[in-house]
Structures are given as C-alpha cells and as structure tokens.
Amino acid sequence: MSRAPYKIDRFATIVVALLLIFLGLVLIDWRYHLVLHSYSHRISLGPVPAWAASSWWPWVFALATLVLGLIGVWWLLAHLRTTTTKQTKMPQSDPHGTITLDTASLASAVADSLQKSGPFSSVKASTARVGASTAVLVTAHLDQHADGASIQEATRALQEQLRSAFPDQGVIARVLLDQPRSPRSDRKSDASARVPSTS
Image 1 (spheres, rainbow, N blue to C red):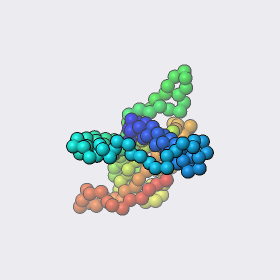
Image 2 (cartoon, rainbow, N blue to C red; image 1 turned 45 degrees about the vertical axis):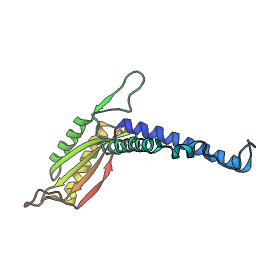
Image 3 (cartoon, rainbow, N blue to C red; image 1 turned 30 degrees about the horizontal axis):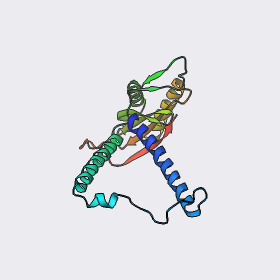
Image 4 (cartoon, helix red, strand yellow; image 1 turned 60 degrees about the horizontal axis):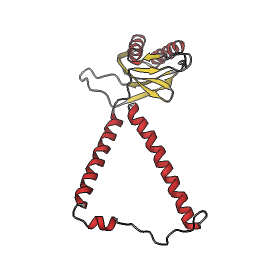
C-alpha cells in the first residue's frame, strides 16, 4: 500500500473513532441526563421524510451511491498496489541531515547474494515498509540438489551480511522457499516453506 492510502486510513480511523466516542457519550447523557436535560423523548428526522418523497431524491441518491462506489473502488485498488518503494528514510537521519536507502538496489543485491551462496535456481526480491524497518521480501526457488544444511548456511550468511551492513536493525529479510521446479514444467509449485525473518 502506498503512503497516500496509509495516511487516509489513519485519518479516517481517527475521525471514525472520535465520532463513535462522541456518539457514545451523547447516548449515555441522553439516557441518564448527566450534563444536558433538554433532550426530546422522540427522535425527529426533520425534513428527510419529505426529501425522500420528492421526485429528485432517487437521482440524488443514485449519484451519491455512484460517487461512494467509485471512492470504494479507488480505495480497494490503492490497497492492492505493491508496497515496493524506491527509497526510504533510514533511522540514522536527524535534523542535521537525511539518509535515504535505495531499496531497489538493496533488493537486487540481496537476491544476487542469496542465489550465489545457496542452492537456488532463481531468486527474486522486493522491498516493503514493516513498521520502522525496511523488509526485503525474497522468493527463492530451490534447485534439484538443495538440502537443509545448504539452505540454512545461505540464509545465515544473508543474516550476517544484513547485520553487518545495518547494525541498527533498520533492514530485515523474509525468505519464502519454493520447491524445485519440475524439468517438464516451469509452473510455480504450490508447495512452499517459510524461513524465519532475518534481522
């Protein structure tokens, strides 16, 4: 998810939370008259019933439904977008200067390093924000001669490299292992295994 929908989500959550709190307090006060005592015993909808009986109401209602539907579709598509970022701000940044990380180069370097050091036929990597850290999301396809020891050695070496390059744990890696591809097909296997995150 990109930063724009994330900011809208946070703002909308705060607004909805405040409205629900306010509504809850009003209902409590309406029931027990703790602050105000001039509440009506009957709830009036005002001019809404008259509006609903007018000829223009269906058109306005249809237009509002269409607008809200388009907003909902945009919201869903915005959340389906890749979380891959080109640059990210590092924790070492301070008021005197900002340090940015080229995440595309980082993902490429991690993929190349893991493929060279481990029993993998192909490795792909992308990056995403996970809290305050940058996560490198790695998908590694095992080759026909892969075994547990060589896989652990390769992932351990990757962990040490990231710890050496980013001792503040600003970068973590999550590796998804995929079964060896069949010689008769290049289709991705449905069976896979996850390796614990390295940080």
